[in-house]
Image 1 (cartoon, helix red, strand yellow):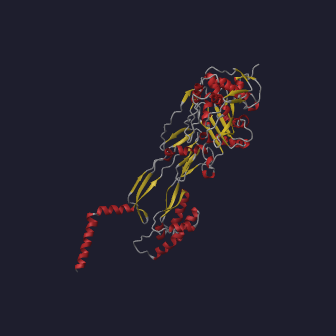
Image 2: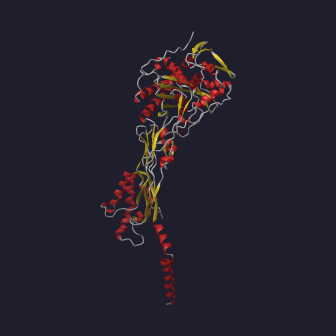
Image 3: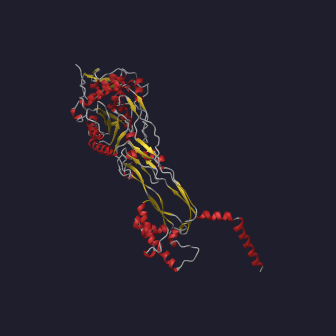
Length: 585
């Protein structure tokens, strides 16, 4: 009796403690054990081209997970003995659920059975990025359950949002768009550069959970996710696809290692097309070599060669030192530093105008004209043209390139005048030449046209920088010299349009040997020459079937221009090209 009384007293004290003194604490602890929290991922913003064509978007998908303990008991409450019927269901459940997962997700049945057999686990991930339609089909089969009549469903398979990033145009502009990694974070291109804005802010859901799943009248607190912003690019995806095909073909013809192409709107600086070859598929980036998953247009620095003569002549014209008809007596070679500079073609002493110097791409004539200019002033012009600094286009990994300072050596000035001894990226060089085509005004290149938040509010974007670099008269004079390049050979012309351009053939610096090894061939073209609207710049690296930009890159430029001009309703020229003398007696 005393022992029984003692036990009852202890029980009473414990009951008072549980239900009276510590009731709220124990209730809170029990509630916490019943609560489950799930993240609600934000929908990543889309990326579209200038015409609204989707280049990157997010589609609904799920993380498929299982509760191994729930599957093994088929949702039975383990606090109570299972009936014979429930035992039969529980015994059949693992095999049945594994069969359903194999049917819709593929894989081995044994793999799913091993996962279901995980001890002391209430949550195991089966597969990520499962399309919503597939998950719905899984749940439909689960609902049929034991006997297939829907009266005794299978329990233990769940899904949480896990959106899929899709790239409908696959490889088109992939170097610009980039891709996301397995965690859904931007890993390259604009997906990387704009990751924080595209990604949005995740939300969360807190709810009460029991053996049979969510408790309908229990805690249910949701913090909604804030979806990411969407971006519209200046790119024309169709024109970019065409440029990529043309570039790839000419890389192959030239036997080049790689190629780059840029198409710009002269007046606005908008990039209409940007191409790299080889490229990659944004949907399957792992299929490409690592060096092909970047964007060489902005990441690679190279010596531009004679395309730079356009900038040199514009600076000289701006200082009143050169006109298209300025006369230069060009010797066979010219002393520079410890050696001599020669032209790419053999000649004796020849009489060329400044237009002839550009048309014939004479390094000697360019050096002779450039030696009239103060070196510090030349360095200032190069900087004003946007060289030696990032363009601010917004693409990740952009190199600044390198230009010499005001104290450059005399021989460096000579080299720089015809495009050696400095380095640029393709966007920088295209924007610099665009300055001349745009009447002497530099326009910062842009690739983002607009952006909106998830609720449709416009995102304020930086205003592209503009600045006057050379006078309009100097730009017009330089364009006249560039038009003489095309006039030198009828095969360089585009039917119906006056075009202006310049070739580049530069020795390529190889850091592995710290020497010049191979060439970079390039060409820049603008049209129509009387009022330039479209600029195309093509660069071929390490060609093996020749090295002249006028033979390897110019045909690619003309093919792209021939597509872009009518596409953007640029009317054919109605006036003839000026007859500019290239030589004199």
